Image (cartoon, helix red, strand yellow):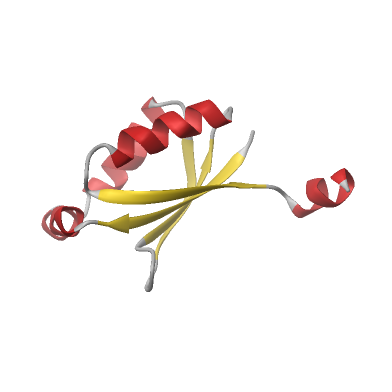
Length: 93
């Protein structure tokens, strides 16, 4: 299944939401599953991005739907990158 890296930055509203309800992070992960994708790993980070998630989805359109749905809430902005296993990348060259 295709893998994607989702780089998330919280808005001020999103920061307040997470501060008041940290469990909301895992609730969002369950919502991602309802949209057809699966969060495989996730980290809170320091710096430009607040969270990095490894997400599997059946195709780009599913991932686009996930990204659009989450972005439309106004609590985070996202940069989504398709990721390729190194062995698959090398064999494609």
